[in-house]
Each structure stands twice: as structure tokens, then as C-alpha cells.
Amino acid sequence: MFEEGQYFAPVTADEDGSLKVHLGADHPGFADPAYRARRDALATLASSWRPGEPCPTADYTAEEHEVWRVVSEALVTKHRAYACREFLDGKESLGLPIDRIPQLAEVSEWLAPLTGFSYRPAAGLVPLREFYGALADKAFWSTQYVRHHSVPLYTPEPDVLHEVVGHGNTLANPRFTALYELAGQASRRVVSTEALEFVSKVFWFTLEFGVLWEAGELKAYGAGILSSPGEIEAFRGMNIRPLDIAAMGTQLYDITDYQDVLYVAESFTQLEDVVGTFWAECTDDSIARVLARTPAHA
Ligand code: TIH
Ligand code: FE2
Image 1 (cartoon, rainbow, N blue to C red):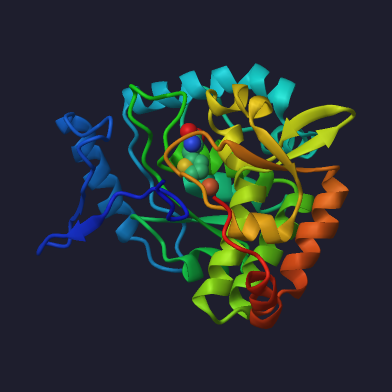
Image 2 (image 1 turned 30 degrees about the horizontal axis):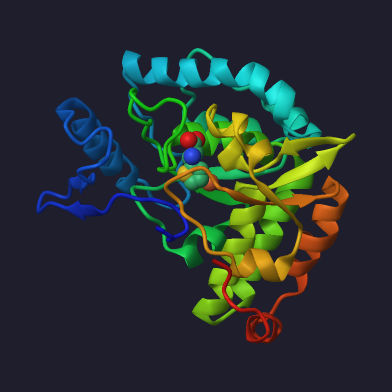
């Protein structure tokens, strides 16, 4: 069991200001010097960004564009089959390229007239308060690197494919961004770490890994399912439970593998009613009351 919101490799700074990304020995890119050099270069690039600036341009290699193409192409039919209507509407209005990785700055420009959301480049792990707080300002902290070419179908590490194909297509739909903003506002309202973690777990089981019923079929709306050609084929066979704030906010999960417990909304409207209202109204006290009567779920 490895639970820390999302998997991020530690990043340190050298004396000259350049960043080093410390991939674990089990990372698929660990023994690939060219990949490690790219990760260091892209982390250093992200760290050069200052608030108010557009995201810096990443000079993606032909191999990186190819990983994007393989995953995006695989997802065309899988999204049609398994993504919810609101995601498909967002995808159609955003019109991401299939054959090349778009720059975060470009995607931000495309999102501006749709929902006003924009990306900020993350060099590594962004603290929970900063990551969620930014959502209240319609800003989304995003990685810029690409998953290793040996693992196109699934990676536990959020990469630009996850951030742009998974989240970007939802950030193009105002019904989704209303929920992202409410999560951001909730994160700014709560004071205790326990309450913030509860808010972030509800986010994990909804905007990252949520599923819903649509005309009798189980569809995905969570970005983590929708950016993984592997997991999108597996989610319907998982342990599907009814939407339940107390359960989602206390559920233990393993971030390194497909999510085996998922929470299903009866409809997008029920998601807005239950989860949107929770984020709109939650406080330290209301969350503490839920925690007091709910044991952690294994
Ligand atoms: N597992 C996702 C993918 O392969 O696209 C990436 C992540 C989703 C959530 C956390 S990491
Ligand atoms: Fe994500």
C-alpha cells in the first residue's frame, strides 16, 4: 500500500540551480540515461517559470512525440466507448492534436475561451495546499515530462499525457471546471491537515478516478482512468461502490496500481449535487464529525 496522493519522484537542486530528478530503482526509466537527462532538463525548465508568465516551451524529442501519439491514438476509440458525455464534449471543443505533444502554454490558450483555466508547470511534487488552492484561481499545476516509452499504457506517475489528455479535456467543460473550482475553494477553507487530506481523497475518488452511470452503461469521468489505455479497459471489472463522501474521504488506496475500489455516481447531476455540495459547504468541523464516526477503510 503506497498512499501519498500521487506518485512523484523526489527533486533536488544543484548549486548551479539545475534540478535533478531521483527516479527509484523500480522506475522504468531508471537505467535509461537519455530519459533521466530529459527528466532533469524538463524539471529545470519548469523551475524557471514565474507567476504571470506562460508555461515555458519544452523542446520535445521525436521519441516523446511518438509516445504521445501512441497513447492518444489508442484512446480515440476507448474514449468513445468508455468516457462520459461531458468528457467527450470537452474533448471535442478542445481539439487536442494526436500526432504531437502540445505545449502547456498552447493548451492554456485553447482553454481560455472555454472555461478560463490555465496550466502552471510543476517541477515535481506540488504541496497539497498549493495544488488544490490554485484550482480556486482556475489554475492547474501540471507536469511537463512524458512517461517512459516502455510503459505507454499505464504509469503511476502523473505525466503530460495524464495532465493534458486526462485533465485537459475535462478542464474544457464548464460543468467539470465548476467542480474543480469548488474543490479548490474547499481546500482554502479548511485549516487542518486531516480535513485537507479528506478533501483531496474525495478529489481522488471523483475527478481522478470517478465513474458514473450513463444510459445504463458504466462510464469513466476521472482523469486517471481516461489517460491510461490500460486502466480504461479494466475499470468496469473493479469493486464499484455507491457515491459516499464519508467512504471516499477515508478509503485507503494504492497509487501504484489500477484502482480496485471505485465510487459510482448515478449521473453527472448526482455528482454535482453530492460532491459539488460537499466541497461547497465543508469545514474543519463538518469533516471532523464525519471522521469521528468513520473508521479508516482498508
Ligand atoms: N495512471 C495514469 C496514466 O497512466 O495515465 C496517470 C496517473 C493518474 C493519477 C495519478 S497518476
Ligand atoms: Fe491527476
